[in-house]
Length: 514
Image 1 (cartoon, one colour):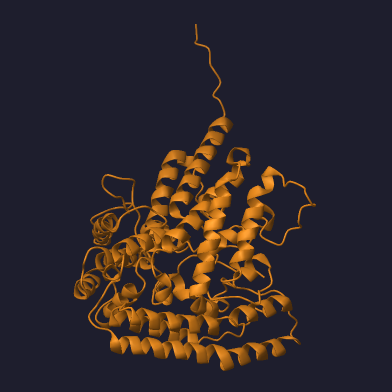
Image 2: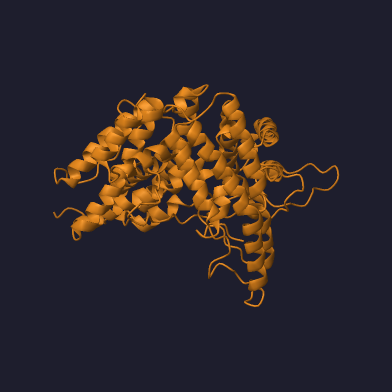
């Protein structure tokens, strides 16, 4: 089975590197080779993760355990935290100096992911289960196949995917229990946020989970009707009733919500939002840094749209490393975003979403498109720039609302002045940002960061710069935190520049004429 692009959120799994399948056990009393130590650790983490992340059965070709728990259930959270602690302890005990360079890089990324899990455990994230990127497991599962993010190839793949879909009702029950607990503890979101979440669930409940044409893999036509009947029965009998229960619970939240609380109003709210922003963007910048840089970027983009500036200026933060901008691909986007072509990666690497890298590529390609179109198709260049500006505007209001004390009307007014969202559409967009703090900032952050990286590499390589090769390299390691991606891209660019210098012909020495 090939899960494409989302958990492209995460690429497909390179089992040989990270040993993420069930590898053969070493002989009794045999000491595993040092070079295999990280692979064994990563494989053990994946096997543990299947307990609360059923999608891992697809990524690592593992069976779904009978004792699977929803990741947002208290027992699932406890398992996740315990597994992260154990993995960190074991990872730090590995003899790093003796590992191969690729394994050292993988180990550093593995540790970063587990440490972020522990840091996130400080906050009651599971009490607002739909506020995570892409709406949580249930919403992803209901739409992943239709979007081509999961592509079953065999009858066994379809059976495995049906098992994953079968976990949706348990996830919904856990979500409702957590929302009830949040309410009992006095935690709540703004009415607009509850309404936005309810709308997401309604769309998922209406989704068609039967594979569309072309998504049956190599299952022969004669076998497809029986499989389609299984999909339909599961949808009608279990999935839609469960999601409708969740939607009804969210509508109760709408009616009971008071005022317009933001993430900073919740317990540990300021720290919680700062963590969400760091994790969504993959960069260590504060809400204030992002906000100020995004305000300046919107001004620069609008100046270019007005013809006052000849080129896109990459987003930067004063007094620190350059900072990116935002992007959250809204479903109402007027332009199709290009998708990143990803290399296969280990299953363990695909358990953590990297929206700044994944969705940021689409914003980056819009900027490239605007430059190319500027010399021939002014309308296309303008449309691309407006889309980028809209994404950066989302970063402005996300950080403004949750990090800097903006109220709802300030956010609505800003969108009305600096985006395509007007009137009810602006209010709806603000509701989505209130519900999913931090995550709406990721794509534009990645997009302008990648654009800036491209400009740097192009200047460094001059005429030797190959845009297609650069774009291909952006997906060479799967999805990564932006800071990790940038470091790897810089190292790659330096290597390519050095190779080009060595391969350059040496001009012959002409002796002076007597």
